[in-house]
Image (cartoon, rainbow, N blue to C red; front, side):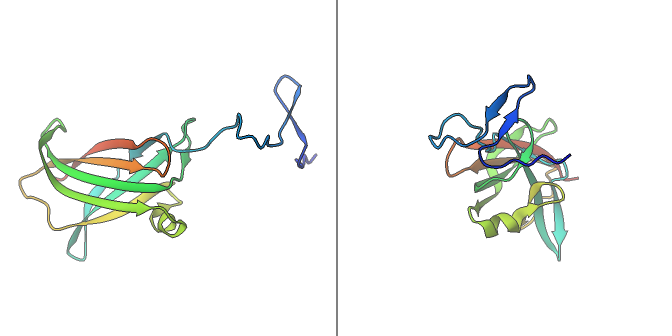
Length: 157
């Protein structure tokens, strides 16, 4: 049996009653899908490409029901030296990058459909030899809505 939903059709709720699925046009009560949380994938790490050090950062966005989604906005990545407990040693930033992701092309450039996360390869001059771990702070500023922030400790050695 095939069920087809046409404009103006009704969907039956679990109690057997129907509800109208047509948009009201008044901007009223409907679900707005947008990121409410982001996380740094555990696979985020420093790598070397053709003798160039890069931070390979994977960022995942989640909506208010915990599903992964895409997002539009601007990123700010900052890296600080960390102690054994993952606490920032001092506020002298080691690296910082600003990445706009406002267009469809920019979104395609960074989005990885397999992991359903964004992959950023952020070049660095070098990694300080005496540092064993760092804290990666990530801020995301959407065009509308609140700024999102997250952080992760990354082991270097």
